[in-house]
Image (cartoon, rainbow, N blue to C red; front, side):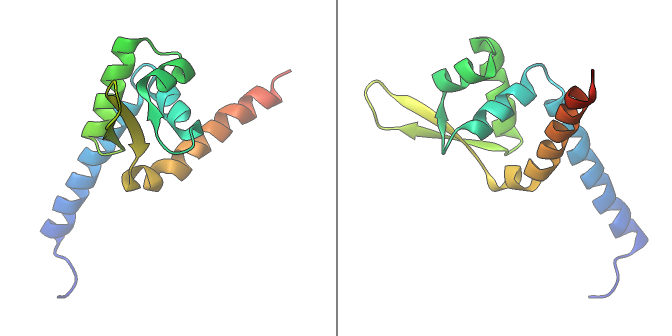
Length: 117
């Protein structure tokens, strides 16, 4: 296997571009970063009610955001065998790749807050 052809490189580049566009579309949704932050602050998985409280999102918005994160593979849902039934949400390995980028965004935002008089 030699160097990729121009057509192969362009095809891979297009797939990467589409994935990045989808990620940016999802991350730019209302309360999305709040949900990610709340989930990141939890040790292990968090239940819906814990996420709702921490993210300050209403139930409908939180449900939508969790579904979108699950669809792009950033989180996984784990059904617990409890009474009443419960679900926990966990980050996946895909999130681990993005974690430094999202932490960088947080630091950037905090830097702006800390430098304002």
